[in-house]
Length: 120
Image 1: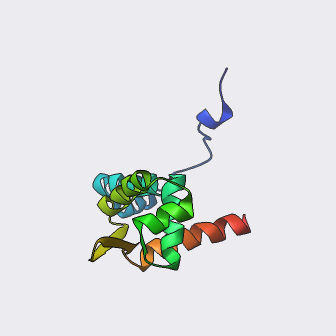
Image 2: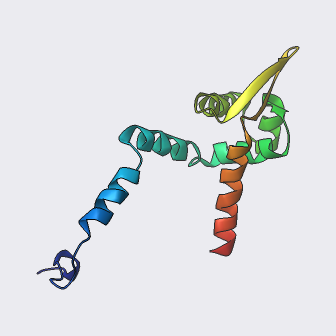
């Protein structure tokens, strides 16, 4: 049984120049791999909750754990992953380490996704 999508329409001609132009504009495999890793970071509910909280203010692990209803070790694990992915920064103030989002791009990604879903 043949699927009609698998059969080429003889009346459709492909524009080789357009295909080549688009091919040159595609991201490299290395860039694609980095994008996949970034989306994986945003694909975890705990990390998204932490990002959501850090959009609002700089917070320490204890504050994040209280907000999220998570243990401090669980929050620390997620923050470590966010830091390795260059999503959050940290700064030490005495015995406390405060976390904030690395830059405005993280907020934009979060807000764009929110907007996309609300307009869905």
